[in-house]
Length: 189
Image 1 (cartoon, rainbow, N blue to C red):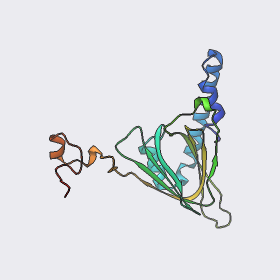
Image 2: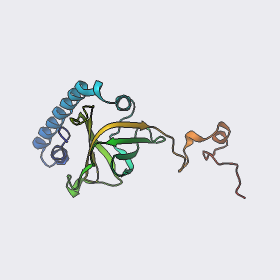
Image 3: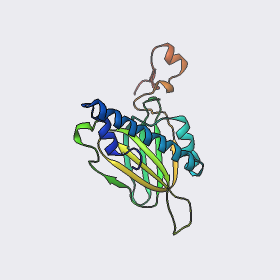
Image 4: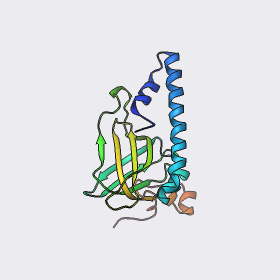
């Protein structure tokens, strides 16, 4: 992470001294402003689906349901955003190199579970060999890991979960009857 560093976050957690906390907060706000300026500069070059996601759903504090690497180039993250818990966000990256995952970038005293998406940074990457656009996504997780993804493409899906049942899948008659299960009224044989 360049802007939302683990060191900045650690300093922000220490409230034992008002002066140090105020300085840490000011430093954090400067870093947040610098990242917003950076994002404005690179945003138009980011994949369209990421641009739409930035506008639509804040990922801060989203619950990380799973994160997996499918071999050479495939990496998927499934999130449940705090701002819209009835939907999921599934990010599927086409990687240019294996994911870089650093363990223990946060002290144990401020780590938390279940795992949440704390902060992320998007940037332009390099792909000199193929002369195509490349991107970086750096993600800081609440369990103390930092995930760095160097990718050429990403897809963003926002599905409605079926299990556990989502109220968004209920029919109007099921909602009025008080059942939000999409299988209400069905009987097993």
